[in-house]
Length: 536
Image (cartoon, rainbow, N blue to C red; front, top):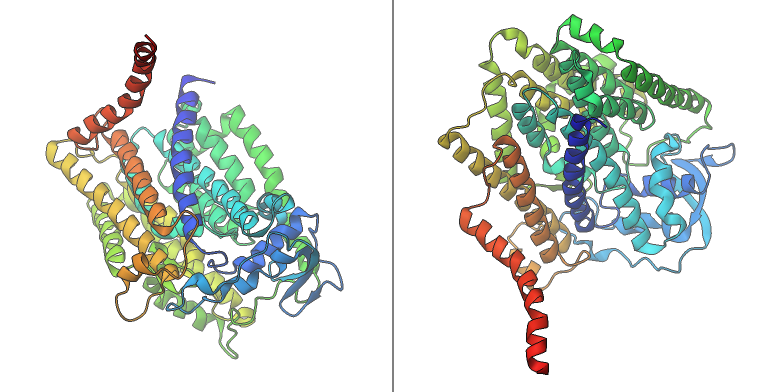
């Protein structure tokens, strides 16, 4: 590997490790089946891992298809007794016996989904059982998302002016991004792969004249494109939107130049095979048995007589209603983050928007405004196409790929603007990073409160300490502490990227940490001497 590729790989490992820790803590803090549609996707994953890829005649009825899975998997729907009831803690869920492994019939509404994601996620259920198996399935899913997010950040780090894009990508990593990575559902992988493909393509176009610097980006685009084609039917649409937005930031000559690179052509050819397999699967599923992919009762909201044009206009009218879901609405849309967290993220988003207005020439803004337009129009078009069969089913999390592209596009529009490196700029950066850590922790512990004691109309924070109704693995107190520490480490890494050689933590704290790190080594080095003294 070239030095540039080695540096990119090292950066990827560091970001992947941090994101994996943060996502895993969110996984442990979220009760089983507290994720939208998680029962159906968990059953699907266990079935695919056992070789049940295609729904067959006689296996379909009502809201899904019959599959053969272990009993504890088939009965996971009983875990969501608290869904839609914000005052109900998660303690109502029954225990999952480790020995409940005999094969029985499970029903899933995800029968038509591509098996690629589910095969990987379902593997832990082959050699584990009970709640540990489901948590392991979640962790596999979360690590897949972490890898693609890390690939996206790595691609941005290879830009010639990477600081503003990296800041925008950090803003796009909202509490909702972490929550979506907690459950068994391809939605998170779809968001992460869309982000990685977009950032990778931007890196490739930026380095079109010296593509040896953009090898991490080339790999990110190839793997992400093949992955997107094998997640959900609509995923390739996000890939197309990301490609259009990325190209608008560069000249036509840059776009033509990348197709002269041998590595890029090889990766594109291999990626095309994966894309073709995903498209073939979608065509095969057009002949699936009736009801194999119907939405569960309560999800489908068909409205008789509603025209697609009315649905399109209604979606445009509701565009800003989805912003809260981009920032953080956990659970079955019954656990929003506090208003303070929503206000803080709205402030960051508006600040980015206003800064883009200041960029000149106006051509630098073109890709950003195209991304904003797609965020409003593309979901409206998809919903209009589905309204006659399924009604209004759109949720904010479905648009998160476009949201991530739009926010990162703001950073790309600003990438030629000088990043503030004076004392005031550094202080403002530190304040915003500490505030971001506080907002993430506040959202994290608030969602924990929803499941530990519920969220009634009165404050019950003290009850979390004195009489918790539900406790996650390790306890909510330990998870919150670990989450806060991991966030500070991540903030310190971002600050070091923005200001190389300058510390993020106060100097006394750094000295105390170094002293604590040296103390065990000093004690170990002195132990043999003390032992010899005692013996003499």
